[in-house]
Length: 226
Image (tube, rainbow, N blue to C red; front, side):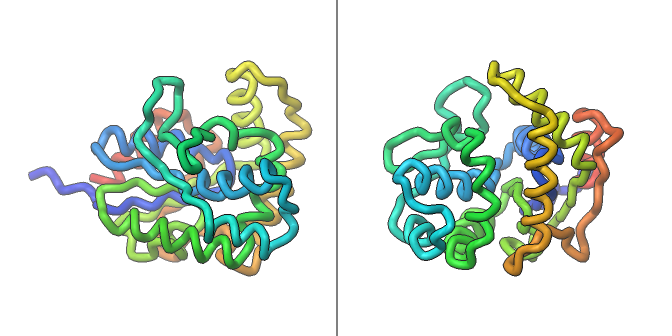
């Protein structure tokens, strides 16, 4: 008899560890909702920058979450996106992938008010079940009751190389050394913040992806599900 796959799957890990790519593929294979929670923090960061709000002003940035409708919907375009990210009716799916957002999203995501407001929304979606949720604190904070928790890791050098290739593939200019520098700094911020620091849940399965191909990682996680 085939075992029913876990209903709520949490995929955590540092930036560019491969969790979003594999999580999306896993959700497709299972027929589940793919929800990369990081896009919500990117949306808040993008709004702050677009409206020229000081990203270091925690009160002002938190107010964005409390007063702005941020929505995630199934992809409406076949351009590589995993979902539509909307602010009101404006599609900002690719806008939030800018270097400016990259440079500021860790600081924004560390704010207590921002995390509290977004965590509540993320839980509401996740608890519906049949979902693959990707982030940094899904298994520890957002959905500690997740049926399966996986922490994907990789060295900063490997993750920087992946981000470099991804950026170049989109036709944009990229500097590997600069990406690596930002990656290391982002890891420091994410792992030392006072609220929901980046770390594996106590009951998470840890998967080091440094020497694994994307297909090997996917196969390993699919085995975990079964």
